[in-house]
Image 1 (cartoon, rainbow, N blue to C red):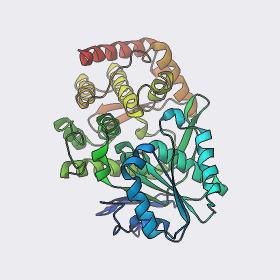
Image 2 (image 1 turned 45 degrees about the vertical axis):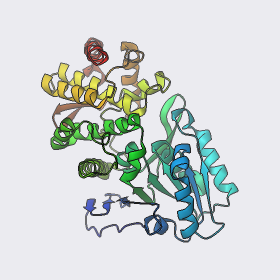
Image 3 (image 1 turned 60 degrees about the vertical axis):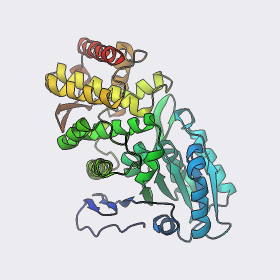
Length: 393
């Protein structure tokens, strides 16, 4: 396995210079590496992850254009001739479907991938989700390796074990818990991201800061342009923010890796956002919908008396300063958001488990549907609309 999973007598997350090792209470162990020059010929991590195996790689079109030649040169050097291939796949939520995962499996079969082989996903979260789900199904489950090239991929998808595709008009309806054999993260990839993609990743980092780390929240407030102004994507501040967010996410996931407990703090920003994405026909990116959700949840917390007005304002103000939306007039309606609450209630075992901020770096759950009555939800949406108007102005 790339890097070295630290010898751990007890479950938990261990950080070292090269990344993180995780051992869950159920015995699941995996490694997340942070490395420089992942496709450099002398970087051994990817070669170790696929050593001696047939490799079928899947890349997003953008990654293929920017890094495809380097990826092919690396595989050509480190993998036996004739035992590897690279295939672009379409990205975007519209293409994150069961048919896409089936096509990945069909491509792998045509390439002669056996149960000893490896699927390699190089790209953002959607590529990782599709390929990871395909790997979980192919021949009842084979290895896959992730090279995460986006900020969302590195701080969110890249550190967990969930895979999935959209179906039945529901985000991530079909999926599996299928840990990657290796998850490789090169911060240099972030320098090539468009600002919108960086902001989407920052939304997931804000999420972790709000619920778990007041110091990280203060860092983001002092530098809301982190990752947006750096020419390398990997300065000292960026590295600190990236690794802190990765560690926080892994520590929070570790005790409940397969979600036997459905109340999860990391679901902050993920109660209303699926409806914002789906009902809006994916006009907003995932991170943008998460930002709207976090702002709405902060107002709900304020109206319930679970947090003060200053904490609510800080969260909304930070999202706006990053350049993320805090309101979407098309989907932030009482009818759609009520539907979103009920859908989450049903999905989470008929408990709401709405995550709301209580103080900087702290959060709590609102567990029952009746705890968010229609009048309160409408008041929260009205406040959100005013926030959006101030932003537009």
